[in-house]
Length: 329
Image (cartoon, rainbow, N blue to C red; front, top):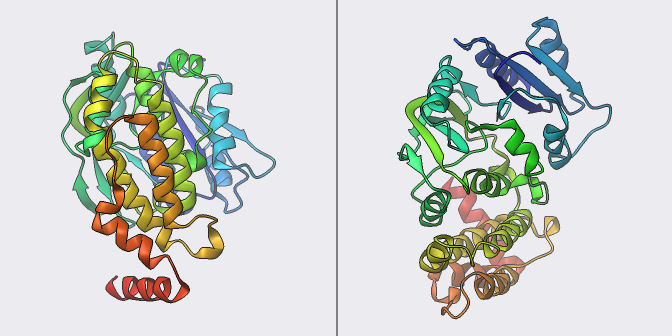
């Protein structure tokens, strides 16, 4: 397969956003790439539109049946790819110089295991809402984890570049995460674990927030995905540097997500979940024992968690909360 880069686009009914995304890919200043489309039984004409482009850089792998997001993304490891690969959401946009900047970055840091650029967040209309938080040019995987635990880094599934052989060797995307939430975090840590992540300072892509899977995922699934991530992090506790990072920042991360997920579960209709906020708190005690054993963990001391637990006790309090929340927005 000719070319240095593969851009991989898993898609299902991307509509007009997919057209913007595909056009941004095909308009790269570097032509040394192919676009691998993993179509998930689209029914909105997106596949037919891509086919009509008649561009020999596009390779399409169609599915005859509807797949889950985990099943579709798991196909990435099975398809032939060029030396380096990146994955993109169907509503995100690459700047024309994305591959050009990545090519420079790879040549500048040939020993890195993961590559990234700075980027902007956009809304449904393509308007920039904010820029990503600044990142160092060189970052070890345990430094990435420390920033993630402290909330001092932004990270999305789009924009990262990696060696295809390294991706395949790791088994591809960890698809044991519901809706792949936190799946990419595990992958980025693994890819940079034996080397480092190199980041270009130039803003080279736009990430569309309003359609992100993480925003659409309900509280129960999100909590289950977080639990999976905690179990992965617990396997790093005996490794140099990671142990120090987890011991120092694990408590802060657990409290942050306990409050965040308590509110997300509270907002999820009862008929779409099997857990209550009190179950989230109980699970987080288990996560604390697993991740930061011996440290005191008292989530009910946080007002936001305590109030969420109280509000989730009855239909009346839940309905009152949801009414006020809708009125506020």
